[in-house]
Image 1 (cartoon, one colour):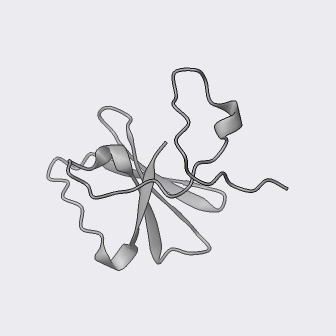
Image 2 (cartoon, rainbow, N blue to C red):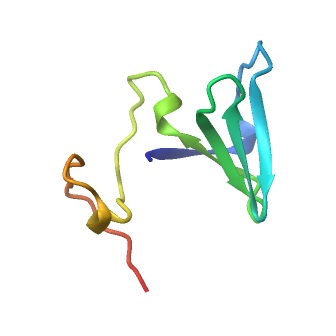
Length: 90
């Protein structure tokens, strides 16, 4: 999944059909479309001032750039491994 982030106060979401649904889980809340089930956003309860946005929900051109790739060693052969720093594992 590719994601971007925003200050929650700066995020403007238009939902005239009322399909955005937030689902709380331990430590976070996830937003998804009630009609198609697509993941849209999430935010941790420890930092509600920041919201992560699923990049696939944004219309191009997004201006987004990949800065870090996680779990690249587990990627399948259909996923090209681009030259970005891997997340350190402990």
